[in-house]
Length: 79
Image (cartoon, rainbow, N blue to C red; front, side):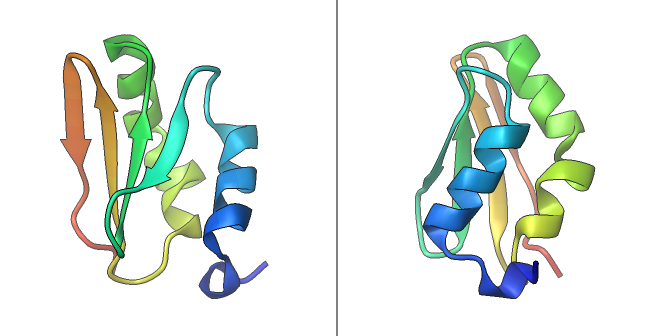
């Protein structure tokens, strides 16, 4: 599957298989995706695994945020 042809619904479906229970994807702007996680530990694991699991699905210029009540990480725009 070519990531340049993914739409929001397809991306959400694919990530539902990869993300841990309790994490949810949302688009907060035209090029920023946010993953909300239930706690720090889960958010940190999602962030650590982003390079292999999530970033290949993003298009050029898109940004990823991983958020929990006590955690926040934001990527640079994908090149």
